[in-house]
Image (cartoon, rainbow, N blue to C red; front, side):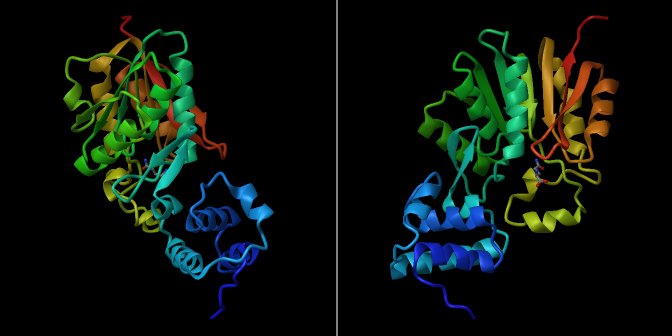
Length: 281
Ligand code: GLN
């Protein structure tokens, strides 16, 4: 077994030889050093610094956890999302940069609506709701979550970031009876329950990932319930799997949504689909 060398540069290189991507190695090393993930330039400037034994042991243990596919965010306890630092742990899905596409789309849909009413369904860590509230301080943002454990994480993030989200515990739109929204936004579970890809996501809550035989059970439910809670011309915007854009477009079209369209993620894959609710007969 290779012994981990003891300078900053050698430690980062060692983790990479074990198979970690450079960015993961750098973020984990910064964490072991008690520095923020923004400090990657510091690693370069201090490449010859010696690591003390505690930092070495912590870094080595964290590298082993990452090699067993645990998300970096669970190891460091935090994730950057839309410019916000969120606290995350295994009670919530690790927020993905791809989900920023959904936030950007929602913000553009709401750009001309003063004081918009918005809800994030299945908020998890609170990522989408918090990003929207931060970008639009005039918005009234609600967030719904069925998992009490996840809701505790989201509430703590909102409190720490001083963002006034109204949280509701429950399933999809059920806790919101009587409310109406300019936009309903969601990154629901959408992986098929027998998808082999789930094995690689074993550290994350299955309830945030899997959704029935074709992965669309929760999306079908949201599409069915949303019209009752959308204002005229309100938007329903959904994240979904890499191959589900057509199916989600069809669900929205069949339900009576208009202006149905999809947006690509950072890899150019159609990752979000949405439409407007039209009350015009
Ligand atoms: N984007 C995640 C993945 O497939 C799944 C997230 C979700 O189901 N909402 O890795």
